[in-house]
Structures are given as C-alpha cells and as structure tokens.
Image (cartoon, rainbow, N blue to C red):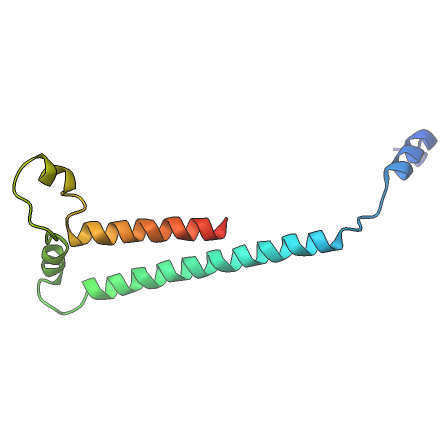
Length: 115
C-alpha cells in the first residue's frame, strides 16, 4: 500500500462532494419510520394478548368449553333449505363466518392504514 493519492481522482471526489441540506425530508422520513415501527409493535402486542386470552379461555375449568364454542360458532344465522344457495352461502352463514369476515376486514383496514 502506498500513501500517494492520485490528484485527478481526488479532484473528482472533491467536486462530487456536497452537503445534504434536506434535513426536513430526512426528519419526515425518520418520523414515518418511527410511527410505522410503533404501529407494528402495537399490532404484535395485540396479537400476543389475543393469543393469551384464547389460551386462558380454552384452559378454563368449564367442562366441554371447546365443544360449546364449536357449537356456538357453527350456529347458522339464516335458516336456508337445501339447495345450491344454501351450499354457496354455507361458509358465511354462521357465527364463525361472520367473525372470519370481520377479522379479514380488520386486517384489510389495518394494512390500508399502515401503508
């Protein structure tokens, strides 16, 4: 290695060097990053809290609590007689279907708000 530097190369670097004066833009981007980081952290904490609540609910001393929950979730909202319409609407014609649609809608809104 040597300590000599090419004067032409040094002059090119000196000419290309400039100060960044857009402090406002940098501050705005960093504020958005901090906001997003906070929202993601809040979302993760909410998911953990919901998982703990579900675990507590499933480990409760009530007898057959899982069976009762399954029966409640499979309850039909509108009684439809057999046929193609009943078969097509079966996934959303229950309490579980409504809860699933609500969760999908919340996830959609959450992603829209964070973008």
